[in-house]
Length: 424
Image (cartoon, rainbow, N blue to C red):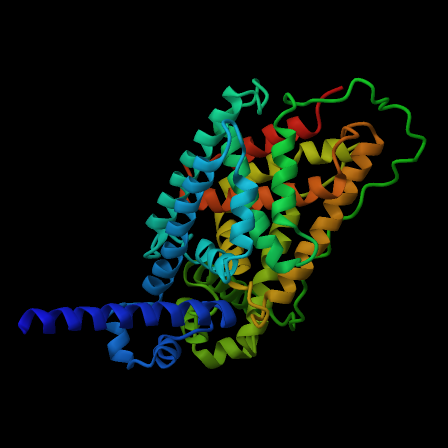
């Protein structure tokens, strides 16, 4: 009788735990991680708030567990697809297709990628291990493909693995902001087909000098966000600068949703009313943080003296190196906010959707001009190269935040661009 009772209690606890996880999954997908409270989840799971805390001590722990279940399924499917494939087959597109049809996976993955990038986050170590496992699994597939001649013999498997997983991650995020414009499966299939070609391959029959179309002027960088504020006196300007700096730091650490105006006021050392005098709402302050980030990034993107689109593209790794060396906080706040803002109701969602669309258009034009000049080979599509570059760059930044010793953003960008824009 005692054993039966204990077994029944265990079964009930297990059922309650699964009910909580299912409710958290649904709410995180529909409302976003930051907009969902533990009380919301408890109500949806038909348990009390204290009852929920008996199973999960925090919302971070819940998110990590929800995503861990999806990742465990993913690794199992990865192994199953690999086992069912022919020797040398590349299986990434098949796995990406499954992800795209697994309800909530892309939204939850995006949320955790940004949330857990702060070293103090309880899921940070788990996500770091996830990247290490994914790179190891992917490298095994690529090594087998290289052995069977599917991948050109001069391609470095370790480097291709880092860049491919980064691009994959970035595409999954981009697809949330640019639905209909980004097909993750199609893009992965295209990148995999390019591996069959040697590094920097160019069709010898292509006449790179034959185009009569004028290259035209280099496109302008996308306009940065602006925030209307009263310039006021020097003391007020310094105070606003301090507020934005501390808000950026807290948003990078805790996210926008879990950072209150009171938290920011305390960090600055002013009252909440004083903070509201300068920024009348948290949304306005968020806009100021994003504008500050854009302005700081633009300072490092001067194009004076650059003669061609190809030269401008080849100079990007230098800017990436400066950012990771001198302004890591800009990368951190971008990673957290771009992932947190995936739900359409987030106050920064429209900003990122517009920003991504503008940046895609900008780099598409750069690659088009590079192709007119003969720098980009004819078999590469400028629009696809723009999407892949943006996605891979973002993905490299996420990987770097989890393991700054293992990932060199600038070097990976440099190798990629040498392959895409080979010397003639």
